[in-house]
Length: 636
Ligand code: SF4
Ligand code: FE2
Image 1 (cartoon, helix red, strand yellow):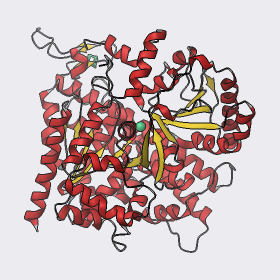
Image 2 (cartoon, rainbow, N blue to C red; image 1 turned 120 degrees about the vertical axis):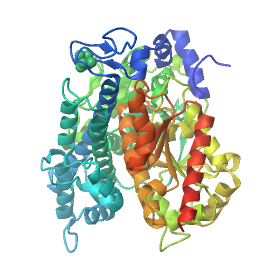
Image 3 (spheres, rainbow, N blue to C red; image 1 turned 90 degrees about the vertical axis):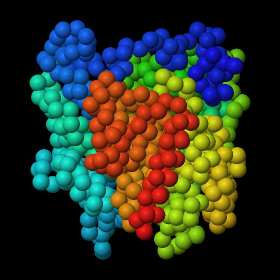
């Protein structure tokens, strides 16, 4: 048995290799951080002003508050919502970048990008109230891009964010209005939240949390427009068959990893790679092989069928194979140590966004006017690196699993429509009402090395599937299942309960795909959690109930990033029970912890719960789904 904290056999091989060559990975660094500081771990360390850090020392006279007088509940609430601000800023800024490019397309200022999915453009335009009848595609495109950009700078607080207003049921919007968390502008809400949590401003933990929820709604707004506009620019994913794990890296090819979150340049790399295959062959390779890591990987998987190399915690290990010629990174979840890992090999690390640089790496600043040219330069850099690859150092784990992915909501509806053409969502509702499945669980989020890499993700998926819960997945969670060989039809046979098997059998009989449907529908990247919420909205609408009554749960089994805190928070505001598989840094204040785990349910119907044991967490999720079903039956 390996000493390493991962369940991924390929990762174990590469961690042994890292040890041999003396490279310290994130797994070593996680160990070095033990034991954790209890103050930080529970959220009662404040670093908001320069008098700090202040910690809560209840037994010391004067130590039960910060120097300014902030109590534990103020400190914990402020720290928590500042995570949300960071996450919402990241997701929405990603959306803004896409909107800027869409506007350039509409105004004819760029040639490398175009409207790929005009149907989606019209659908989004109609949804957000833009006239489409008899209008040119580019005129509609300009209005949609302008509406997206208007979400950021709006300061008129009598107006509401367009996207969440359009995509959320009225009853829920009214709850947000009543609780004063409905945002007007993204920048405004995030700036206000940072102001609210400055030293000497808000000390009321409930008011601070509501400010945080407003920011969290900006997060889903930014996510939703990022998903929509990416679909318009690059196409809405359809089912794809590919493979996952480090074995997707090919010894005889020029290997390029696409890593990060923003698809703007990576899509161009995919395009350029098709054109430059011959240059790779001239260098002695059999071609160019693209693989994905984290959500840029999920974006190009969903739209282009690019294989998954690995997920967040194991990103350094892709370089340990000795066959990674270039790793192209954009923003979010990229370890600065990739460059140090690359120094042990011939790998080139290429950063592509002005706000994300790693000292010593190559930087090709993203420029929408020359995106394909940059992509070609990057590929040529990788081809050059390939020529310097030391064959003696190549060691690729022989592990790869079949992956069936690409399930945007539209792709899922296309399949459901084969059973019920008039009302595709009815297929899930019928199965819930017949007791065939207990409900839907969205498995989302990151890796967190406070636990064992991918253990919580995969255990929860197996437990829920066994209990007839229909699974959808995004982000590094989706990748965990793919790496473990659970994202294919064989996994349905192995892990699904009888009801879920029947549900899948009915769909497989009509789906018309070359492969059987997988154990979980991979709905895309982290910003594509908007697709998951659209599914929840469709279920609420079809069942004729509020979100808080839908048998729908969310789990972030290994949550890590600020973005995960933001995502979890808007899920709670939507009424979704949300499991987190690490103990959140809210436990330092009983009051704040009770607000987010108990009182939230009275207000929103959704709530957080922390459970590090994946089996216990699954049991609780099944109970929640059953309770919601039972209540729905009583209402009829
Ligand atoms: Fe300490 Fe208050 Fe400053 Fe926080 S804001 S570091 S509690 S003095
Ligand atoms: Fe992500």
